[in-house]
Length: 266
Image 1 (cartoon, helix red, strand yellow):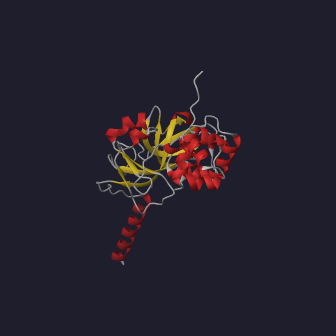
Image 2 (image 1 turned 90 degrees about the vertical axis):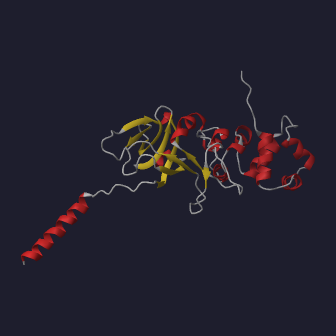
Image 3 (image 1 turned 60 degrees about the horizontal axis):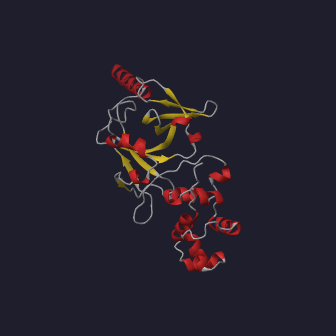
């Protein structure tokens, strides 16, 4: 039987440093000695007491299971704030999707860029912090800080007027049920990375992926195959979109021509 790996000691040290507490300061807040806290942080206490586990769980507003089983240093700042807000997966009973991310010098999430040439690597390493750290990064100060963003380069013409090779910026979608005819980048086990109009069917436990280009057929993907979903936020392209007219615009144009013909007749 494979032994279970626990992250209690590393998590305790990580959370203390994240709060910018010294060992003396945190020990005082927890009502224990600095020597005891140091022993807990460095793994010298192999079997911490239930009292200590509950004390730290209450102080950091996380479940004991999370402090024991989840390597918090691998999570984004956004996800940690989500846990602190009460959305703890072990309390809710749902499955966690650990999101690997990178941060800048001020501990804010970067926007990682996934070009076409990195797509194959991304399918293997989307959950690996080391791989994610190799991707180009940038920041957009005008974007809200309460979301995690990533940018993907498109391939093909299935989402015209967004051209082939454009870059789509998406925000990480935790609740897949919110995907209702929504433009998203979908990372799936078999289909790879796709940019489509996405709708989730709770009854079928599947996603419908539709292209804006009517030449492409809509298809379904089982929810079990989906690894990540990034909700469309913005697009960047070097190409000027091809000018197209809607039926409404054509109708208005015909009406204007008829009006001018009437004026000439009169």
